[in-house]
Amino acid sequence: MNNESVFDPKHQIKNLESKIVVALERIAESFRVALWQESKENKLSPIQMQILIFLLFHSNEKCKVSYLAQEFNMTKATVSDAVKALAQKKLISKHTDAGDSRSYEIHLTTEGKEVAQKAANFAQPIAQPLHALSNNQKKVLYTSLLELIHKLQQADIISVQRMCFQCRFHRVNQGKHFCAFLDQSLQEEELRVDCAEFEVKS
Image (cartoon, rainbow, N blue to C red; front, side, top):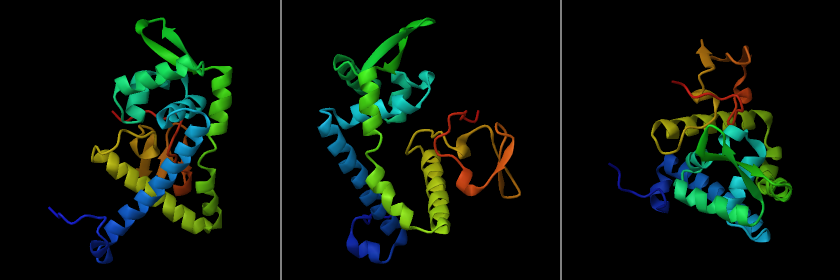
């Protein structure tokens, strides 16, 4: 087991993996800063902002405490507290599941939708520099990130992602990607990282 820290500059000099990890950490920090700034403007916590954005773009069956806890790698209690705070601010409403009185869907209110739509653009400054990259550079970066996310999920470091590699509809034949749901081949840049039709492999 290598005990050298990836954050040690001397170790980074001779270790490309460490440089990559630190580079990813710097990018993650930019997301945290951007999200925190947007959160302060709306007088909400970062997790409350993330929940609002998630509710804006995902189907009702995913908008439940248990799913949100898995999505954000948090306990149900932590997510429940955030949802309670959002309800008190009248940004979300709860709709009890007719088949299970202990379960409920979380819906955005009109005000909540307005806040979420504005907040959903918090990452635009991070996306902007990508426009300067060539199409080939973006393709290589994207496919590398997909592979990394997939391996992190396989190592149980992150939860199951709604991406092609984990989907039951995804096939690979002679190195070519195919989606059984869409019934069509996919180029690498067409692989999805958050798919509405995703179903986890059994």
